[in-house]
Figure (tube, rainbow, N blue to C red):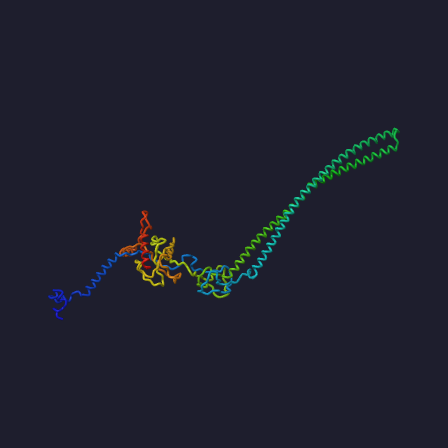
Length: 466
């Protein structure tokens, strides 16, 4: 092509004079690319002033908020041998359904009629206690009778002593009268002796008087003997009165000793009855542990023991059961420098493993496939340099997917304040933490940044749900 006809010769007058200058001009593609680069730079600079929602990112797994909703191992309360399996892995069970049947391995429980025999022993012990109580009552009645008999015997003995004393008095009076007769008879005999010597009385009269004196002497001796016997009877009555109390006290002491022995045996029997009742209750409860039942509704996840006839120890786990309707919660771990920015009730966005999502963490309103959550628990102690946070479903947002399972991965970010993009880039390049949003509300009643950020986050989630 001639140079005068070249397209550059018309656009630039210098090309008409210098042919080589036309060949070193910048191509049109380069200028276009430069214009696009300049436009993109201006666009990126302008985008740096767009709003960006600060957030705290963390990862974790799905767990449950309530301890009873977590997978639990069902242990064997007693030692035994597996006799029969009632379930298989993956089977849905109701609370109280039998999982495994066990049989005894301890020889003291081998007797199949052990509960019935123990109940019979208890009934026999109760009957023995009843008879023992009747014996105790009989001994009490015996003591009452002994005390009554003691009073009657004491009254009779006192009366007999009084009678003996009166008889002694009577015999003493008789002795005095007999002594007077003896004195008179003695004087009369002496006078008769004098008169006989003088010849005034005959021998016959003297012998009669002597006979009379002998009779009086015999009466005196009889009265003295009678008085001595009465006095001895009085002493015997007094001794009997004294010994009567000791005799009855001995009987009462023996009866009281028997009664206390019966009472001690009664208390011992009551203790044995209580022990046997405890043993019977334990046997009844133990008989219920031969069937290991499901503690709640759920699914049998894994059998920890295999086969039949295997021996299990006390407290050894047998199967693992997962509740069928757990209250899910996201277990997230946050860096220590971010934990002051979190509080219970803060909004969180979550992305679950296996669930399709398109995430823009800085613009939560434009994300797709994420779900809302609320911070429910913040641990007060770190775990390997991080703090554990539990997030529950947000009741104001759409519910979490039902196919979620405990243990699956989750990615979450807590929504904080809104800043510009250039400020966020500058913060992350320098390693600074997000802005501290402060208290929910000030003293003057104005809303704090935390409340404003939560309202913005809520607005974003509402837009997303729409």
